[in-house]
Image 1 (cartoon, rainbow, N blue to C red):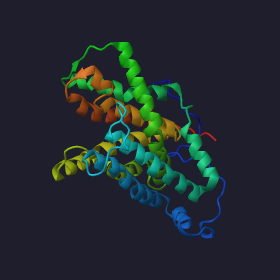
Image 2: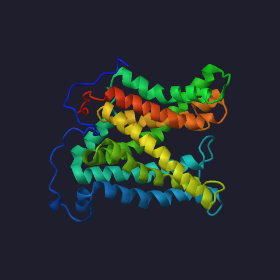
Image 3: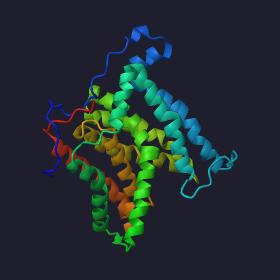
Image 4: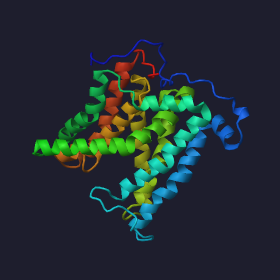
Length: 312
């Protein structure tokens, strides 16, 4: 872990590093209507917009999946299923526009520029990139085998190519913009007020709830939805903690947060890295334990270490 490096700036006592100071925007009192309210309550405004816009558009493909409305408008492309369509609609109709509106209302155009710089902030050190890219899949794979799954033989070149394509598609189409909203706006702002851990746990609740419509795809019952919500809250709490410590270690890099999110997904979904390498169901528990292990490692290595300022 000696390759992990950070730049010397004052220690932040466990909080998510704040973005580079933005140019002072006009006082909230000079704004009118919804912008003034948004500037005063940015997180609440984001959540209001995210759910008001997100739930209706997410339920469109869900209703089409159940035959309630026509599915003729849904693309019939291999690999583009109901869940992915709902996720893309959520990101581009709700999360990203809401995040941009709130950032502009609260911090003006300079706030948008800082947010954009954080999405391409890649200079975080080779060591951190190794942890972010390989930590969760490697630990998940090792634990899955330790828990009883058996290793499968794969044709390495096609497998690697397919996983790289899946990773890039998920990152560029969904997770980058999803984390621009959740990590870049919600978790960062809550972190300034409540500290890293409480910010992560507070973010986990709406982060879990926004994914709930996906569990109405296919057969479902009241029990299955309640069970899914409980599981989502646990999983999302762990993931948001990992992302929170990742933000602290990398100086608030949204790109790093998005890659961590993507690697978690690619380590745990049925067409992902670990699923293609092992046979068995132990990988599901292994994935959760892996997130906890990686979170502890990131927290321990970055503890007492200065964090890097967001690129200006």
